[in-house]
Every structure is written in C-alpha cells, then in structure tokens.
Amino acid sequence: MPYLQIDSQKFLHNYQIILNTIAPKNPEKIAIVLKDNAYGHGLKQIAELAKRVKIQNAFVKNTYEALEIAPFFSYIAILYPHSLPYDSLFKEALQSPNIYFCAHSLESLKNYPKGTKIELKVDSGMHRNGIAKNTLNQAFKLIAQNALELKGIYTHNGFGDDFGSEFYTQNTEFLAIKEESLKLCAHYNLPRPRFHSLSSSGAFRAKDTQHDLQDDLFRIGIAFYGYLCQDSAFATLNLKPIAALFAQKISTLMLKSNARIGYHGVSTLKENIVSTYDIGYGDGLFRLREGMQVCSAEGFRILPRASMDCISIESAQEEVCVFNDARIFAQAFGTIPYEILSHLHAYIPKVII
Ligand SMILES: *Cc1c(COP(=O)(O)O)cnc(C)c1O
Image 1: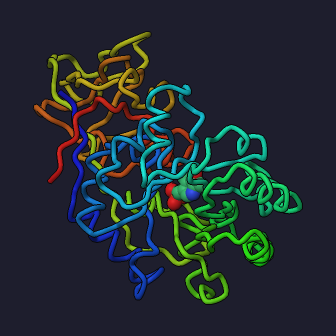
Image 2 (image 1 turned 180 degrees about the vertical axis):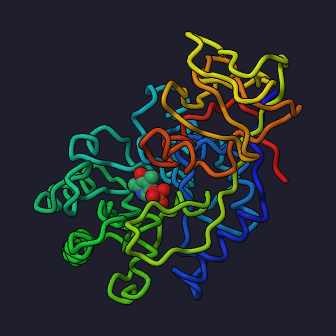
Image 3 (image 1 turned 135 degrees about the vertical axis):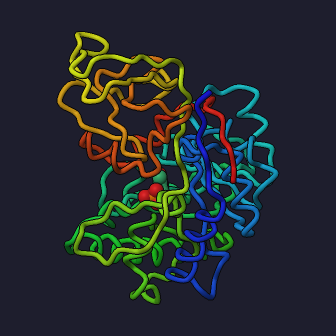
C-alpha cells in the first residue's frame, strides 16, 4: 500500500516561520487554505494539525470540504460554493453558523437565502474572479435587499510571486476598494466585514509594508505545506515540505544490465535489478515518460514509462520514498509543486508522524 507521510514537526516548523514572518503579534490573522483535499495532503489530517496550533480560519473549495472540517474551525469560507451540486450538503452548509460563501459575481448574490454569510470577491487587477470595483455599489444594494450577512470583502493578488510593481498596484487598488466598502457599510448600516487579499507569497512579500495593508487575514496555503514558488530575487525562507510519498514493492526481477523495461522498453537497466512499486498515474502521480530523469528520494532511478498502477525502480528495497520534495517532480514536468501535490488521490492513506 502506498502512503503519504505527513510530518507534524515540519508543519509546526512552517507555522512558526509563517507566524514570525507575517504576523508575530496577531496569530489570529493566519488562515489556512485547505482546498482540494489540503493540496492533496488530506483535508482532515491537515485540519487537525491546524487546530493543534489554534488556527481559527480556513478556506476550502466546496461544500463537502467545508462540512468535513466544520468542527475544527471557528470560520470556514467556501471559495467555490457552486462547484458541487445544489443538494442537501449545500443546504446543510447554508445552515451552518461557521460557514461562509464566497461570491464572485453580482448574479451569484441573487440566489442565496436571507441570512447567508457572504464573502464578496472583488477584482483588484488580476482580472480572474470577482466583481468589478465600480459595481461595489450594486453588490451592497443586493446584499441589503436580500438581507445577506456580509462577512468579508476580499481579492486575490496574482503577482505575489513576481518581481515587479504589479503587486503594489493591486495592493493600492485593494486599499481603494476597502475605503469604498467602508463607506458603503456605513451607508447601509452594515457591520465592518473582514478584509483580505494575500496568499503565501504575497503575505511574505508584504511583511515590510504590512502596516499599509492592514489586512485582517492572510490566506496561507502552499507555505504550510512547505513550499513557495516565488521569483528567485526574493529571500528564501527555510520552509520544509511536510509530505513524503512512499510506495511498497510489488515484485523484483534480476536481469542483465541493458535489459529493457516496461512499455515499449524505453528504459534500459544500468543495474541488474529492478522492482515495481505500487503507485502509478492512476493514483495521481504524474506519468514519467521517455526523456524524463527522476530519482526516488534515496537516489534510485525511476524508470519511464510509468504505468497506471505501478512504477519500475532500480531498487530492491521493500519500500521506497518516491519523493519527499515535490519540486523534483514539478521540475521534471515543467510545473509547480501545487499541481504535483493536488493530483495525489484522496484515497492514498495518510500517516502522520
Ligand atoms: C489557493 C488560494 C490561496 C492560497 O494560495 P497559496 O499560494 O497556496 O498560499 C489563497 N487565496 C485564494 C483565493 C486561493 O484560491
């Protein structure tokens, strides 16, 4: 059985770095992003670790995830509430006192029952999701008309990773949105919502100018899992990847070196021994194919082509660590650790150490 080992000490270590760097005096401002099965790490397992360090705010993808972790947090916001059907889960979430619904458009505000707790997404320059700033007025009107509870106003800064000025342009735009929103709150006699705009890289980057940002919350995802994907011009922090993926041996063959292995025989053995291990692309591990060179954490060659349920490795060990740093696979596939990790299937067992 393959398994994903989650190192709780490394999680705590990352939490300390996040806290000390971003909000040493305001731990309540650190929110954890647990969407997509906690980036493949196991929703409940990571929620449990977050609870241990008393994190009160979480962000998830859908209603299912929100209900799964409802007991762990004071406040849970659903980033994409309509990514699952409007069914009994949705209704249950609507009635949960600690679950908020993110709204990305004026239309979506029309469909919620009275009293629904809303986090309003506003575009500040990434031009992805969210209402335009010049429609804030209409959004407030709808919120007031439909007697929704406005809990938060947020945006997503899409330039936290990049060296350049766009990051600051977006921050300035969000400040203007905040100002406008506060005026509208006063006008409609609504309590002040919480304001937030930054994910891991943006929050780390803004640490020096935080007093200008005055965000109430930082939505931290990837840094908790031990990564940052910033431009190399930024100082690196000593975050530690918390997950290591292990697989078990299925069978071993002793062969002549130069033997060709697997589909199309694309790999040629250097050693005399090859084993298969019980994880493949069907489990969400990206499919190694010809031309790709990746080794296990122990340094054993993983031989292309990977199969759906197994991979061949030049090793005789009973167990191998396929990776303990997703950047190895991310590099081989020209992608980012987020994608490698979030693809791992939820049913891969999690072992917390
Ligand atoms: C995923 C996500 C985050 C977290 O981003 P990281 O780079 O993982 O810290 C924050 N905010 C929103 C809206 C997101 O979708």
